[in-house]
Picture 1: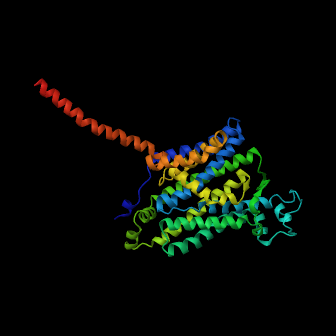
Picture 2 (picture 1 turned 90 degrees about the vertical axis):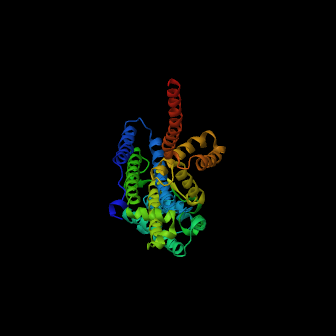
Picture 3 (picture 1 turned 60 degrees about the horizontal axis):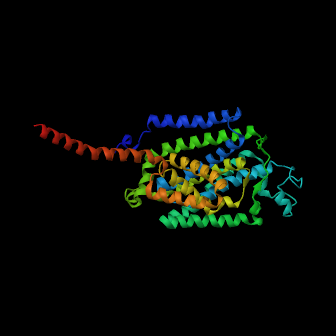
Length: 380
């Protein structure tokens, strides 16, 4: 089989659609915010939605394209957030409650000097490197052990859930020196800019939209490449991939690490916009929600998880104000409806409508032909 047959080109209209959507988020929305047509609260809220879209797209890369249902993506999202949070806590300086050049919770715990591992986080480049290194290393070690042991299916999901749960218990402990159950908050500056100013919030939104766009385009190219075809073959029939001479554990390990890095970057962008990070972001509930976003939007499409993350969280923002006691029921009901009646999610609705119309047309044509034939016979 030739290389041209293995690589599937991306249609021009898809590139055009992607460019239009990216232009709207990167240029139009910030301009509307700067002229007062969109509030600072709204731009900040949508920035959070786009960070969740990064988490959802990392789930889709694993689940939709590789067949690995991970219930631990919130761990990597939170680890990236904690690495960014450590830098933001260092930027508070001596403006905290105790007026010492260290986070207030360390002073409260009786520390006279800053712990050694905290000191390098006064450097933004170092913090950004750690955003990639720490989650990537955790994912690599866990993935290497799991895939070399041929852990598959529901057992992989259970293991990732156990990893996330164990990590959250560790971060809840005060002796981890990571803020305990309160986590990190009260951020002041990022790269010298006031993190609470409208200009900084707008800038963070633009950066988030740009990184999400680059991530989407990169993954779109990857999944359409020869590597992507092998990746999807692992999802559909891993044994055949092994018999064909490919090392499926290596493919799965690479995708698992890559998805963890994407989720981690989303978490790093999330923290300065939301203003807090604590172990509750690491619980398995958040990983399960990300799976729901992916399923609702459309699994195995890349654009679907983005649509699902934005739409479900927008619905959550409304429902938790209007019907706070019913939100979990709404979320569960939505997931059931999608599984039973919309297996391709929101982005699959146009295709379902086209298929239904085509089916109706095929059913109608024989009836019309029969009516015409009967008319001709009666005329004769």
